[in-house]
Amino acid sequence: MPQAATTHDAGLATTMRISITRLARRLRVERLGLGDTEMALSDIQLAALAALDRHEAMSPGELAEHEKVQPPSMTRVIAVLEERNLVQRAPHPTDRRQVILTVTADGRALVNRVRRRREAWLAQRLQELSEEELAALAAAAPILEKLSQS
Amino acid sequence: MPQAATTHDAGLATTMRISITRLARRLRVERLGLGDTEMALSDIQLAALAALDRHEAMSPGELAEHEKVQPPSMTRVIAVLEERNLVQRAPHPTDRRQVILTVTADGRALVNRVRRRREAWLAQRLQELSEEELAALAAAAPILEKLSQS
DNA sequence: TATTGTTATACTCTATAACTATA
DNA sequence: TATAGTTATAGAGTATAACAATA
Image (cartoon, rainbow over all chains, first blue to last red; front, top):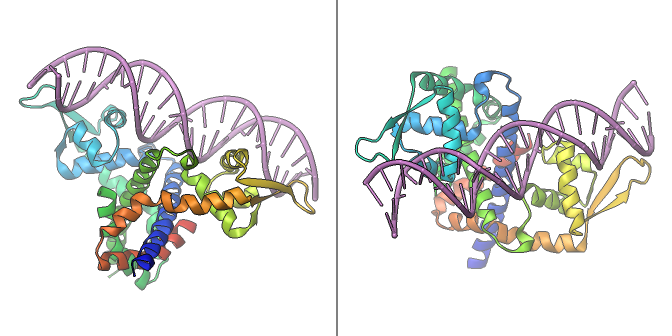
């Protein structure tokens, strides 16, 4: 019965969208409560830093596409990260239009240190869940990741 | 082994946070692509309208708490919704400081009409998933909802 | 005094458009 | 001409602080 399936999907999409947007807003708010200077990294700043940490070297354009933002938005993100000596630029070996971004030692140390603390609120919420609920979330996590990259 | 569990939770929190923030950004972007005037409702505007639709009557303060925003933010959301005749105000029967908000017929019609269309991008992504993936997401959805309200 | 809600103001994030340098 | 990246500008959304009205 396609109707039922469609209706089901629409309902799932609705609740997912509402939960996701509200959770994202909540995570943003929780971040604001952190007073440390090092915590003054926005979601997208940390996501970009983490991507660089993971991929070793990326151009601004690749980073923008990876994080699903427009290049000018990524330019500003990079400017902040560079200003704090968390990433550094290097010229592309053959194409002088391009820029190669890499994480600095400071950036690498910070991303590892910050990651744990940035998840504090969510991790705390997760610890309040039952084993079954955690298992359900763990099963859904890679799917959410795939959706976020599609 | 608590360490392993903690580490596991931290990893889950990390991937969840990244996926959630990226999905929320993606949903926001997809929304911008919709040209219809009626689609010019932000996430929070639709969420507030949906909450009113569901709860029949709420005060601005209740609505702000429900959606995890500060009262001044909700004031602006309500102003937009009222301007478009989607919600209406009524005086509280006993406490003249308070305001009772209800959805208008227009608002109720719109929320039902918009809901389906607003989910178009996500619903499309969901249709591309396998039965197993959908089942995993459906199992996780209520947990995400609970998290978003905690 | 405390509470509900609004107004005033500022900040962050993101986008589009226009521009520069290079291919 | 096309591409990579930046700069300029604008808009949306949210927060905190200060205020008004009522309890």
